[in-house]
Length: 76
Image 1 (cartoon, rainbow, N blue to C red):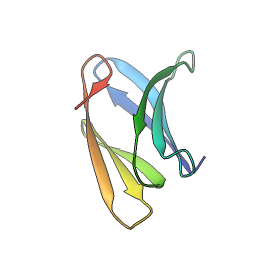
Image 2 (image 1 turned 30 degrees about the horizontal axis):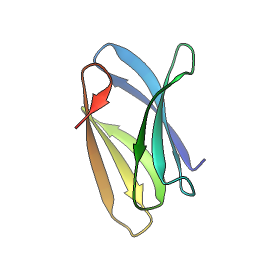
Image 3 (image 1 turned 90 degrees about the vertical axis):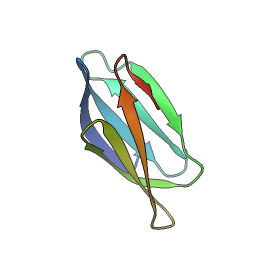
Image 4 (image 1 turned 180 degrees about the horizontal axis):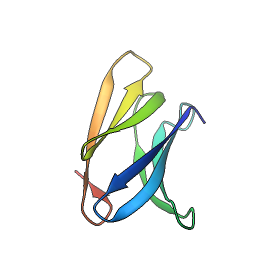
């Protein structure tokens, strides 16, 4: 695992984790640690941060990717 970040969207609190070899970002529920969603990423992911209603990922090529979290735990 490369990074972990507390996240909050709608009425849910959780943790986002990133792993460069998995090429994905996972969001876990804070209360029972169940996986709420997995976001596949084509590049290796080195970091994650929440910016408003977005999760922003730092990628291996120096780029960034942002995914908007929507109410109900989805993404757009």
